[in-house]
Length: 183
Picture (cartoon, rainbow, N blue to C red):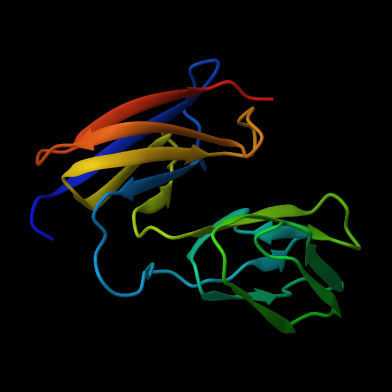
């Protein structure tokens, strides 16, 4: 895409430390034509009585598989508005699938193991990724022009756990730092 740039976002906790695992979304005025695809498996495994990964970003319309890699059975569910579902008890090496057809945050739980939690972020932008161990995300290929930068993390103190700010992406890129006041 002509005029594509890199948007670099740094996310820090209220104590100034890097916040790994925050989701950075760029809503650009111009988006590429065609379906959105990310270069990883759309899979939310149950492993060691946890969801792995804890947060999964997928485009609208994606099918996410839920393989059970534990020796115990799981009952995965969500009551979230973008996607409500209930995957009844299934055992080791069994897999279930769910189509996520609306954008939004889908909180996951296990009806058997109350401590299990995870999230599927269903997005309508190709410009999305999680921050690394240094609290940084560098999203490439973003078109120059008006945009909105959104940050999601389960500890952000807003009703939707999201912060947003307008941005103007220049041909040379855009950088910003967020400091999150957690719960």
